[in-house]
Image (tube, rainbow, N blue to C red):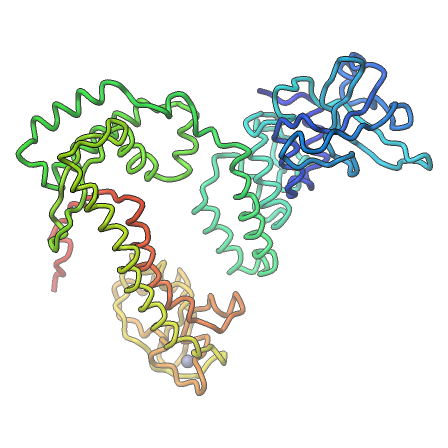
Length: 477
Ligand SMILES: [Zn+2]
């Protein structure tokens, strides 16, 4: 639906409040216990868009609704501009909002009309409108169609924290892309550490409000293409002798998953599935509706697999019972026991590195790790320092490209001569730029990967295959 002018005015005027819990809940929810303001005529309010329809002085009273009739929090009486209320004239009701308080000595409240449809929330995340320059500080292009959801994201995550550094993102948000952009801006000193911290706070804050808009439960999301069951039978019949082969299992699963994806195409639920990555479809929906599929056997040999034909919806067969029991046992064992490996390693690494700190700018060494610079390694090496002759130079993109396929001398903590710690030049400029000297967190990245791998296996796994050309791994001498 397209926003009406009063709704656009409301959203733009009170955009600063989008970063508060009360406002988000009140704006994107149907609450029947909002304060009520009696006004002379709703007809008048509806016809004159955005006009003043009543003052507190004229309204008979702002009625406080009965407490306990709605579990959701709401402002008991409108107190701050932007609070959403019901405007009431006789039996007739519509949404209004408090526009201004105490504009003169009589404490006049100015209330305005917002929307008529009381069965819907005052605004919806999917509603669209035309955004113009000046509506939000990060937008200065010509008019574009945008959605309320994108406006909220841009305001709360970007506009209110980073100002105009990142221009209004008017497309589906890509978390990784955004993280990379912001990280780059921090390193370039265009975003301060304080701003970055607020940015992260706001990201996490909004994460708590997924419930306000989670269209995951659509009719289609509750079942799958009925033809899948028949195709599954055919595939199993064709491959009956090889159902322990992970490659065969993967092929069967992939075909069924592709059919399920096709079935979901265009459905609203896919927006939630896409946001959660492939796991929702390839693990959750596959097990629920297609087939529990391949399961790593409870065996010493990791390439041994078993296959459960039924989906969870089709129910359990006695003949599969031991496989399911083994899977449960194995994944719980993995979580309980194997996380210990990663956990122990993490503690070990932390103990080694916890006291290691960057304590100086440059230890002045001309030694370094001799490294053959390959083109594909450049992104990972930018920001390091190399030694040319007796001189240390920061490795930027230009310099790196001029040294491709040559041996360079890379400053490294291994060769650092700093007493009492290491120096910035022997690490990477990231630490200097973000103003930290503790490097133990970076070392922990390695071991925490093992830890989270075994933690994740309890939620179900996906069989993946990769084709390798052995020749790629043979180096020409
Ligand atoms: Zn050094």
